[in-house]
Amino acid sequence: MGEGTKEDYDLITIHDSKNERSVFKRVIQWLQTMDGESPYQISRLEHCLQTATRAEKDGADTETIVCALLHDIGDAISPSNHSQASAAVLRPYIGEKNYWIILNHGLFQGYYWMHHYEKDRNLREKYIDHPYYQDCIDFCSKWDQESFDPNYETQSLDYFLPMIEEILSREPKSFV
Ligand SMILES: [Fe+2]
Image: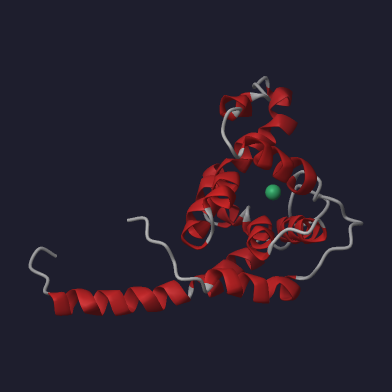
């Protein structure tokens, strides 16, 4: 790589930008792998769709609805740090606040289960002075932890496709 010319790097750039455009396709494939068996009464895909449906019903903007839909996609590639994986995939296309919420939602969701395993359910309080602390609590309490209801009327993946495409077609920010 040390001897690469500008022309060589131009070839890499062209390839990378084609690869970038296929993020939409890959994200949909990951979502589809989340359909089927789960420990809940609904599949993990249905959980994602339900979270996004609730966000839309509450009047959230398109970026926030898409983040609600994709907040768990990290589960498809890296379950033990799914929040970080989801946040990393979406980061180039979304604002700082939604990024922070996705990045930390796993820890904040711990409030609902950690005490059953002798862990501190209030671990999230270490972020109590963070400007997005309450937003992350609201994301979890109103949308994420509510969205395991087999009887909730939930929009389909097809319904959300144009929204996902809109957000993932944004010019990506680079975090090299
Ligand atoms: Fe979730």
